[in-house]
Length: 247
Image (cartoon, rainbow, N blue to C red; front, top):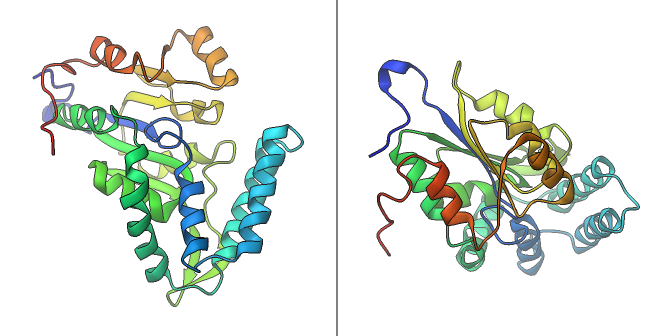
């Protein structure tokens, strides 16, 4: 079946996957925040401030770090005082709608890696509440998103982790990576993912300009939604041997 791990070899190899723009067509965090506003679980003013910060980054008037700081701070502020169980329930509701925006290959790549003994890890800059739902539904082993502080079951308005900031994903990977494990596979779409994409097999999926330049310099594979399945079949041992059962 093309396994890439033998129990006698020690820790399982890992695959590092990005969510937004890689497994999911768009930003799942934006969809989740919009849902929170619709159901009355996020202050509209704080969410709009986060959106303005993101737009300023898109225009080039804020750096990645500056924009990420503002977005995370405003998001946490928007949740202040709300019950964590309500926000988690909202994440479940949101998933039933947004899951249709997963790229068609997303479930296959997770399944094929798992079948070969690879520990799958999802690292995302989006809110952890929706990231955890996505990971569970995709069958991903470990997942980390942006965490907001909760005390006595309610959000405090404080940000605990900021994976969308430069270097943020690297620290999260260090926390959950098994000792002496090797990174077998990695796939992302942004130059911010670069720090966790140094793997035996690396794919830059519809990369931004910064990541595309790095991929060229380092000889990484580059794929888009039209070529990704062929690229995976070429690079991942045994990828095309089995197919996911529909339903």
